[in-house]
Image 1 (cartoon, rainbow, N blue to C red):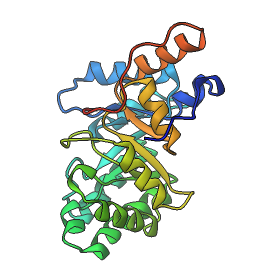
Image 2 (cartoon, helix red, strand yellow; image 1 turned 180 degrees about the vertical axis):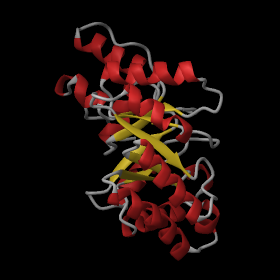
Image 3 (cartoon, rainbow, N blue to C red; image 1 turned 90 degrees about the horizontal axis):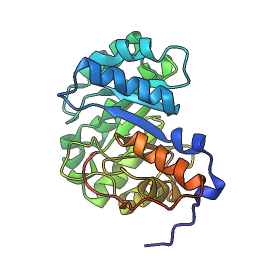
Image 4 (spheres, helix red, strand yellow; image 1 turned 135 degrees about the vertical axis):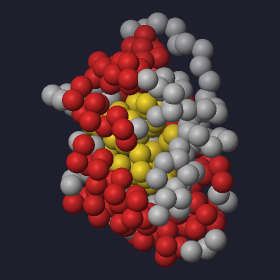
Length: 248
């Protein structure tokens, strides 16, 4: 592993917060939890909340007047919806106020070598997303892919015009790894951004992925990450914390 060069001395709290998509996607979350999560996202001025499609309107209302975007998922979590359904999901999410769409590729089609179908599926969501001024992030679910398939997914995502490549849903057997993030960064043009999801639960882990070119993460440990950053900036001892691990 290369030595990490990124240091908090050269970062502001906003630099950290605006890498975070605060994730509110678990199926069992009730309304109160989602609402509290949106208020937490506003408190720390993160980049976005990523909520379930049924929660987009509620999140948009809570976050009105803030600098926190509302994102949601498309074809989640397995990617096997037909393209027309993904487009319908995207249109409804946009109508409800989402400005970021995290879509899952057709994983089986990629593994079967049906690259044209994968690109067409991505492009259809990108077209409706971009027409509404939204960002589109494309989730590969790397736990199920070979390196060769990940590279093809990068090229197909870029060809389809999406804004981000993203590692994972957080619901597969594993999430983001530094090796995968390096691979994705190396196989996309500089204007394509990289999102790490699944396992970035500490400030140290966030700094690691930022160091390899990640500009967004999906996280549930938002408060712990930012509080740790504040403590370190204040000169307190760094909290014990791990690097990338499983889970979301």
